[in-house]
Image (tube, rainbow over all chains, first blue to last red; front, side):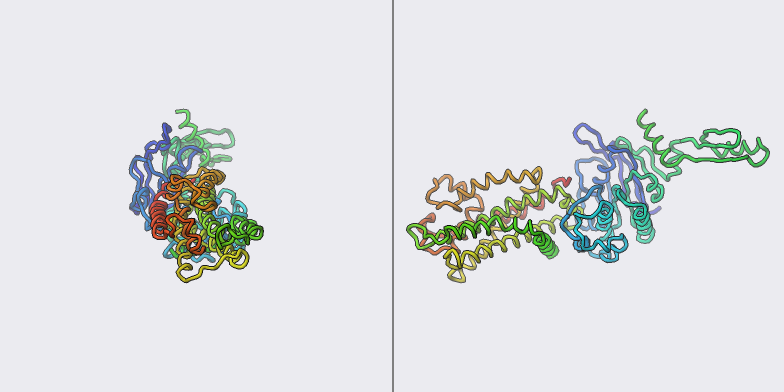
Length: 280
Length: 259
């Protein structure tokens, strides 16, 4: 069993009479990239902000790196990296100045110039943060999030505004950090392809509850979204495509002409799940 | 601490490299002071040996300190909160302290530039005598430093409580009232005792008093309460504001939601 880096049990939080989180349980292991999916208003950001130590007033058990985020101090904070959803802070600061300043808060920061080069920000080093394009500003946020060599990184919709190339570079960087440095990543995103690409496990949060948690394949299974089996002569929606294929094989006493099996994509599983939760 | 100082220095350079902001920062006191001095600066104040320019000087500096700390700073902090700079500070180890030291450093640099400009105008143009003794230079120095420390943390708290950067305009009215009642513009003897005692609670009164003690000759003591410079009292009141603010500000700022 790998170490548990984030442990959440029975987490509840209400704003007034609205129950935003309604009994959340989660375990994140070291070196894991974990995605939190859910429609807007499901409580994703609230959950992440509780883990980051920015919100109080919740009940339940929460441990991040072995400490309660609401009470943990600077030594704990130095082990976290935070990339929030929208950030337009320090607009007058030049990119390199800002990254170097943030780096100086940590004992063993990354090399600032290497990091800028890695995130494709080298040529923006002397530009003021306030005039960066959306995608570059987002890469600056990521740079500020990882410059302190965090053990846990919170990424709230990190690739919004990235072009496909920047997105791919970013995915490679995150994968490398998770694999080489044991960085644990909690990602929230609306980009299902990103979730499928990056994460070992995905949790779907709807109306303040974790509906399901597991690998993309397990997610599909949990939803029992049907697979589509198609061949020259018919098509069938089934929860057990391999049984159907076997049957067809026997019926044709040999290869099935034009056999095609389409498993549900993560998107279909996800939408199915949300739909079921809504009509329940 | 050092990181906070460096932060303040960078902030200051960032501001000074923007011409519009540079003019804004200086227009408040130094430019107004310069114009007033050129206009009426060399008229003597009735019944004394000092000129109007010399008499205005401590009041102007006191108000520059007071308004930088309690008006300009809250506006900057409200803007920082709006943009997420405060939230970024909360996301970093020691971030809030570094941020506060940085803002205080920047305010001090802005003030020193302002005060230096006022004094550079005052000595040659307004007929204001430079502090005559090392003791008076020392008084000038500690009143400026302690006076700044007395208002910067409080200004930080006000800034974090303001609903937004525009709401800082609300601060102008109370600041005006204090300016009138603290003897910055009018001689103290013109004010009723009760008003004066209320004003004595606030730092502006003592900032102005300390600066008069440093910059005006003893011949104007006739206009002071008790006909003496009450510097000990000034140090105590400004010190209380400074300590209270430094203890309370980081605690309050940590509790303020950054969104």
